[in-house]
Length: 218
Image 1: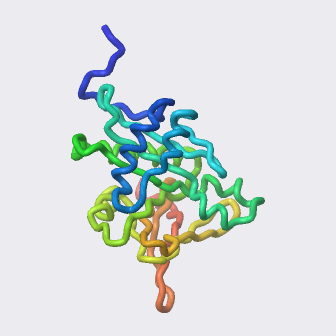
Image 2 (image 1 turned 180 degrees about the horizontal axis):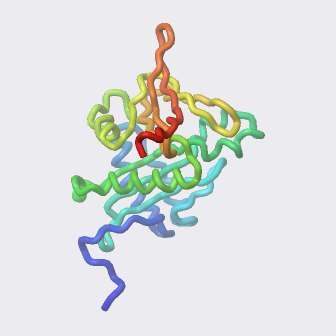
Image 3 (image 1 turned 180 degrees about the vertical axis):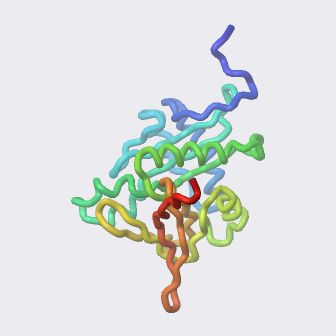
């Protein structure tokens, strides 16, 4: 008997020290043509593993392996820019309100096998357990294939500059895409929470609402 995984077995776990180069090389696929995956992330993963210290909270890097091969990665963070817009006294209460999917990529030779879906689902479950209300992914405007991919996995695509409204321990909050060439893909994470689009005059918004259970459906 052996503890080594079979060559076709996929495992998902936090990145280990030493995984930095492989993780960032995959992350570069996700941002190809739109910047670069930060080399500082590789160094942080090599030092800290999959839990990366950030100004607010921690980033988490999950690695999908098939045998010994790094086949995919997802890197999630608290929404740092959004948190910076709040007073320091509120940040501790808000750091887990949202989780941002910063990078998600699968090696070209391993696409079409559900690895990206499993990475996303694992990241969502981790964020849900931490109390996060919403998962956010910033999708380049016009990246319709990526938008379809997220829609199939339960995400709603916000219109450009369309705000997302949700309740936190600090009261009602909102976020948007930042008007920087992206749109938000948004998913409610907590049980009984749904996203609904509401219109007011000439504008619209996505509102995260709790749906009361119906005793007649039991």
